[in-house]
Image (cartoon, rainbow, N blue to C red; front, side):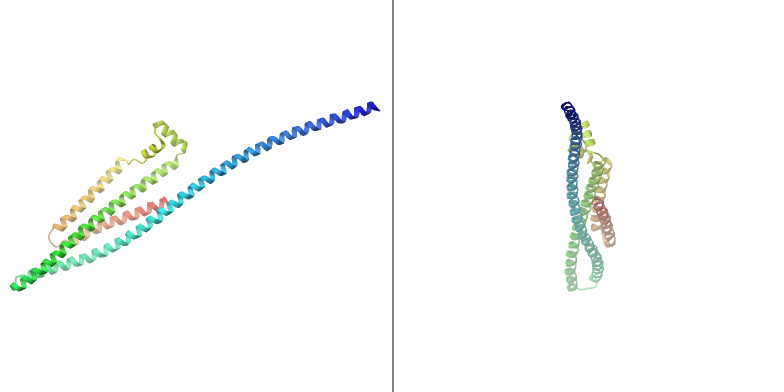
Length: 262
């Protein structure tokens, strides 16, 4: 009986040891799975944090672009209002110039028929008319200079907006690793590489120079009209309207570029 009891105890001990071994194997397998799950969760948490950072950066950029768009829109509306006012003033000025020309011609015609007293009166009126014409000349010169400056400023803004769009498109098509590799090959920093991408090409420089020469010729033509004999109001009106139409097209192009940026 003792022998049977010992054998029974040994059998139970052996079964218990086998069960314990199986349990240990199962426990080790579960620990490996838990460890793998923990690493996977950690990696996913890191990815989520990175995506949150990118989302915050994108949100800030969107807010900045929206502010730029609204600011540019307000400026364009103000300039459009100024342009409308200038067009109205130009029409009024043309009418005034026509009246001045008619009055001057009539006064010159009447001078030969009037007495000395009438001649003195006419001379006073002519002096007043000359002052008005001189004032008009000053106004036209100031208007043309302001208009030319405004057109040049719009061209500069359009060129900058196009550069910004091209650089943004180039950077968007390249990964950070590609940009760093290109900078490493050229032995320059990534900032220097971005400045290289923004360098103006020869064709753009030629267009800028051509536009500057056209503006110069336009100002010379205005000056020539102001120094010419009467009548010249219609030619002056056509020249200024031509520049106003050019400015209007530039305003529309700049507005379109801003909308594309936003």
